[in-house]
Length: 387
Length: 129
Ligand SMILES: [Zn+2]
Image (cartoon, rainbow over all chains, first blue to last red; front, side, top):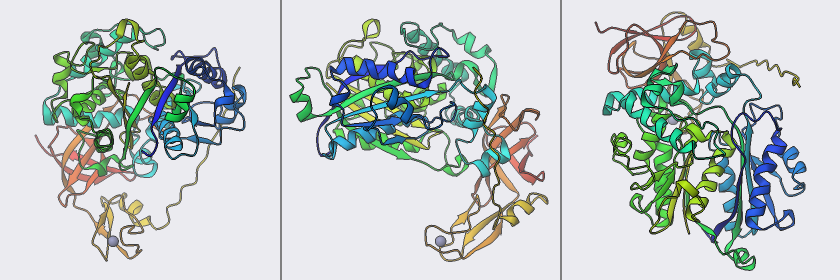
């Protein structure tokens, strides 16, 4: 990257079924917190990058109404979309706008109101998250079905079990119970997960992230601006890698790992001159429990096929070798598509600043990572941050 | 309050792919092969984007393959809500093409599969006992 970029403010709305707000109030909830956290106002903002998939809300072009409500009109010329990695696509655009020298202070805001349509419509929208003609139209794919194809193959090739996957859900719910902003705050057991309703075998209801409403906002600034504003706890972006893969899941040639995520991770490690061993805290994209296991492998925390061992041994719990998703993950914190990637940056920023309360991870070198996957591996972004 | 519903109706072009859709009515699965570089496309493409030519020929794929992975769909999307539960699989054909299909029979990863069509899609019948 040409210029160093840091995070100077983060905000996140409460995630959940938010029928008390429209997308405007919801987004402002996150933006207000990020502004207060950074100690800035709208006047300091050069550019706003909005991220939203918007397919499930009444507002199909939501960036202008959100900007208007938040008094940011005139500074928000773009909305980006990368399915479930939309929040990271907004961060990527914001970071590069600063790194290039074009602007000095950018607000990235991600939001989605996903509960405004019914569940069956939502499944039909998600099922189009591959290739309409060659997959959804002929075969009635759904988003859980896509990830289930990965789960079945991972189980057959590596001996991963439904119990292993359930452990990811148990962990997510345990930590979400300590997070006031999380969508699902109940604790669950392995038994609960195994007995829950089958959605698309081997994926069950409690293997799946909920359909959530939510918003997250991050204020990024150049190093010069950070000095000028006298920010004393910036979190630095050391690298942000990306990857992508075929729309048709059948054409990927393998169904135990996400190539897009591996490519993104390798790029981020190379940019930051870090290795998986350096990472002390990570947020990974656990939209389904199998996705958390694959993430450990794709990020190099475990060898291919051995991701479940980290869960069995508790290595990704608080105090473990690399703590993962201590805010509850997509699984239980919630997964409002546009907000997720930025809520990951919110989370690692809180952790690196040691403001994470009961779920604070102990750092030695203060290195953290975010892993955000879009679609069923169509897009991926991995970023490495440090204090 | 109740929002105004949005009804989307789509007209999807089939031009150039008639052979594929017709094949689905007689147990034939068709892909296309670039006559310049030999790349085999499935799903079929009218253009080879690798060598910028539209000179592709139709190729009938093998009706046998191996099941790579599958899932039993219980929660069905709009458009499929009246279907019985169905199994979606990915099958690797004898010539190495990976394709999506529905699966009939008792699936296991690596099962041998016979590929047929039901008029609307490719269906893989499990041959193992
Ligand atoms: Zn060619």
